Each structure stands twice: as structure tokens, then as C-alpha cells.
Length: 348
Picture 1 (tube, rainbow, N blue to C red):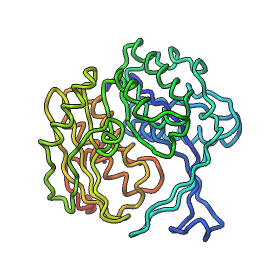
Picture 2: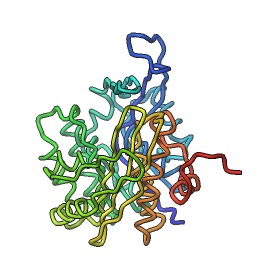
Picture 3: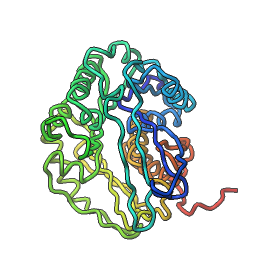
Picture 4: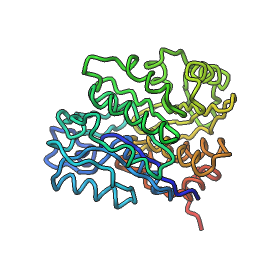
């Protein structure tokens, strides 16, 4: 397998979660873990046996040391992490249950990543020996400076001959520095080879009309003609992009979701099976697991786009079954689900 590294870039935070589905006002304990979209992708890739490196900026203190140790425990390279700034970002999360949705409170203002500026990261050094660079719209949403760092990184990756992918990752509550995502993201996306996003994210950032994914069971049939038309529109607007991915989710309750996905490449649309997930253990990071699985498939099996989509969708389904931000599965486990039974029976 090609050992050239895949580099991801973004913010990682400490996640503090009350145990046992308690609300904030009910608890005096919080479970601590770490996560962030691009770090989650890097962990997935390392679990699958690829060489992944995560780049960010963290303060020079022992809490950040513990965060780096956590990434290294999964095999993620951290050589390119810049140390400096005041603090590690935090987010607090009440977990969803039944008809009660999850609730997130961010405490990330003035974090080490929030105060990152262009020129701080040695991108030429980071990209030495790399084949792929992945970023997301979250990084561009944090501040005008981090959006400029995204542009800087994309330009350096293109100059180094890397494949560049973008997860749109639209987060309404993060865009607070006077720019709209519709202004910032499309110019950056013009330089990318692959896009990932939900149907809602394509609609909000690119102003598109998309079919509705209204699955209620695993027998649901996607509107493949509608997604093919939408994908062709994206391809016409962004001619450099070779792969356009839609992640699809239908939420029946906080603990019962259905997921699927499509991949448009070479002028044709591929679709994945529909997974019926009941119960959902933790849906944080499931989109990142989808992206990580697709990146693995694209990098490790470049001639088999259907494998990449099936693998990514299976990885997304499995992530729903474990707590925390990170996917916890090997390539063999994901492929077993992608090609086999969804019953969950013990294999003997």
C-alpha cells in the first residue's frame, strides 16, 4: 500500500460530556475526550493503516501535551503541530436521547487555533512526502486569519502536486467575523479535487436545490437522477473537482438514523446502500468517519470508486455505534460490513 502521507488541517478541542445522558444542570462530572473534524479524519486514516498527519496550533502546556499523546496513541503523526497561543478550545455537549436533541456549548474564542495567522506554519515542510491534503469549512469559519491560512495551505499543496479535498462542514454559529460562507468557501473550493458535504451544506453554501433524502427503512430508494443532476451542476461550476460526494442522513429520532451517500466521478453517479441505525450511540464525528472512509478508499483503491463509497458509508454507519469523536474500527472491520451482513451477529 502507498505509504505517502495524507495531511489534515484544523482545530482539535477537548470535549466535556455529562455521563448517562444527564443535562448540564444535573451533573457535577464531565467525561473528557478530544475531537475535531479534521483530527477525526486523521484518526480514521491511521486506523486503516495509512500514514496520516494532523496539523494545528496548540498551546505549550500539559493539557495540550495530553491531546497530542491521544492522537499519537492512534498512530497519527503530529510533527507539524505548532505550539503557541493561550489555550486549547473546549466544547461541552449534552447527548441526545429519543426526542431530545443534543446541545453543544463552544468555548473556543481566543484559542491557539483561533489566533493562528498566515506565515506561521511551514507548509513546504509539512507537505514533504505527502500525497494528499484535506481541510474543511470549519477551519475557514473560525476567523478571517484561519480562512487565509486555509488559502495559504491549499496554494502550497497545489504547488507541491498534492490532491486537495474539502469537507464543506457548514456550521452557522461559527461564522462571526463579518464574512458569509458563500463569499469565503467557493473561491477556496475552486482549487480542490474532491468535495464532501451533506445535502444541506451544498444547498446553503452553493445555493442549490437538492432532492430530499426521506428514508424510513433500509429499503428506501434514492432519487439517483436528482443527485446526478445536482452533482453535474457542481462539476460544471468547479471544473477542477473530480469527485463530488453527498452524505445523506434521515433522522427519525435522536437514537434512530438512516444514512447513505452518493459519489459523482467521471460523469456518472454511484450510490451506496441505506443503513438503518437503531440505536445510535453517538452521532458526533459520523460525517468525519464517512470522509475518512472515502479518503481511504480513494487513496488505497484509486481505480474502484464504488469501493470507496461503500467503505465510507459503512465507516459512517459503524461510527454511530461508539462514543466519542473518533472512529474506532480497522479497515477489515469496515470492509466486512460494507460487503456483508448488517445483523450484528457474532462471527464464529
